[in-house]
Amino acid sequence: MGKWLVRLLIFAGNLYRRMLAMGLHLIGPRAAYGLFAFAGRRMYRLLDPLRNYSEKQCLAALGDRLSQAETRRISEQAFVHRCWNLADLMLADWRVRERTCAGVGGQIPEPYRGMLRDAVAQRKPVILLTAYYGPFDLLPLFLGYNGIPAGAVYLPHANARFDVYRRRIRTRSGCSAIPVADAINELPRILESGGAVALLSDHHATKGGVEVEFLGIPTAASRAVGILAARYDAIVAVAAIRRTNKPFRFEIVVGDYFDATTWRDDTDPVITITKRYLAAIERIVRDDPTQYLWAHARWGASAASAQQASPGSNSPNPSPPGERLGEGEQET
Image (spheres, rainbow, N blue to C red):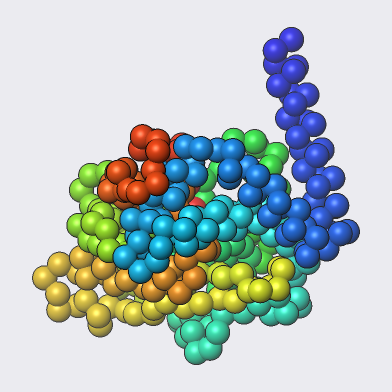
């Protein structure tokens, strides 16, 4: 009986998702964004642990430049942007094709688009990096329509049918989806053959990472990107998709683009590569911090701990809400 109930709930959820996707398409982006913003703000204000953790991380990173009230506003708006990711995915199912991609802002700016297409044509290995920023779910879709078919690392969703739906949209343009569990084998294989890979790269390394600062806070970054780039002499491109003031209109911002000439003479190229790509992500985040996912445990527990006794805080520092978010959602 219990299994049938679970199946019924999953079926109902999938039916609701299909109806929601159709409904969002019919009402249009402006109404869809308004609906999700309303729900997101209500949810954010109810989820005390998540809200407190997000605000403390935002304050720790931006408090030297902005007031506490401003960092709270940024943190809330960042959660709304996270909610818009689902709306964008469903709207993209109907509204993003090769002929419409540029019209919604999905074209990589020149000269980077041409440089990346040339690298792909010449079979030069490319590592494309992004962060928990803006509608990062759409990056594989846009990459393919820009003529850059990449293997994108992603975390499969627990709901298998929703995972199929999400993967179908994101790989429609020619990119492939690489489950996190397969990345250790697939990424070297693609790079060795002169292909392109894409992944989120702003994760906290629990051990063995490169000691760096991100947004002014000490942290540890994974060595994986640096090792892969150095081993295969890969081009490294750091970019993000940013929402504009118009619903379902985007711009792709490129934070940096560099190759092996940057690190070839360094004693430890992994450190050079890691610090450079994180600096590029930091510039993107600072340019519009409302689109960064502050609830993501980028610094482990350290950033929120630094603000545990901050003015106006009347609750103990919570653990990162859902440690799996920081450790498991290593995707683009």
